[in-house]
Image (tube, rainbow, N blue to C red; front, side):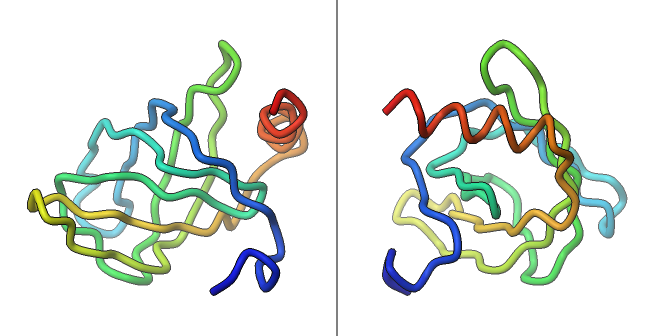
Length: 107
């Protein structure tokens, strides 16, 4: 998908993120984002996350922690054996959206 086709522009990022897989026993993992947008993010994971899995995500943004409910939309195997996971936010409050939007304003 090209950047022009996306609803929300993406920004390369390296933010700390705690991912909890709601559907698979609540497995938690600390990861880092590769990109972020108002509609979702991607991160590098050591764990398998199946497309469609429901996740709870905590992201450190601007000295704050934002909480989002999300759904995995893709998983790609990386050369080092880890996985790149893309998620779309399914529930993100206005405060969290403002923090993410502020990242774009600083670029």
